[in-house]
Length: 303
Ligand code: FAD
Image (tube, rainbow, N blue to C red; front, top):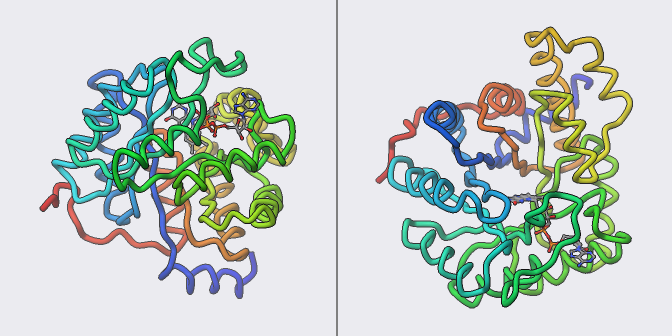
């Protein structure tokens, strides 16, 4: 990064928007870690914070508890992830209503992965929503929710080609989605090419890049294989040999992610979704390097 691009990243900090994704905790220790992270990141005043929904609906209650606490104890705008897996339409609608009752007006609507795990063939539940587009339409019929959906810069592993993949995105937009959040990626050219394809298909909603700071390179590499995201050789090389050196790994990880987001800023991107993995430190450092400053608003500043 040269000095003029550094300056341009700082100039654009005024218009940069961020959102943070968390997952529901499984035990008390994880709950403490989650809330420490939310408390640390809240002062960046994210556009919204989202809470994931476990495969097969396995975390409905923890997801509901987490968003309910966000609604009651913070001034943050929550978004609940919701999937079609393992439930018929009436049951999914009922869950959406439960979220709405605790104050959720924004869903990240997903088909979800098969209960057998990523890679198994997806079978819609009898009487259930078959895919993301059907779920978006179902939610839209329930209420005037804000609805975000997934997008895949390297295409979803089940999509035979980009045309099929982007057709599903188009169906989700036609059904009422107003924002797409991408699967994580590490090559910004790939993202840019994908957005060009999406625009050529007549889709104009924001395609917000999903940024994954790398806390554990081995884990990210394994997950990438499953979800069809590629790991460039240069990235593997950066973490090579640091397996036993957590401190240096964290420094490298924050440099890698900061380079990625600053390059995206130079390409005109001003909205970022961070997969926090319920850890604040790397995301905090990256937001700070993006020029954002934590405003002095306590997390408990609910009205
Ligand atoms: P869809 O949008 O319905 O489809 C995705 C793609 O798969 C489409 O592009 C389509 O081309 C292809 N496809 C779908 N069905 C078929 C078919 N029958 N034949 C051929 N191609 C097909 N998972 C969770 O369990 N919980 C979460 O909270 C969660 N959050 C996520 C958040 C984001 C931002 C992203 C990107 C993913 C998330 N996922 C989550 C993972 C997601 O559930 C999986 O990627 C799942 O496999 C697809 O769900 P989807 O909504 O993207 O599917």
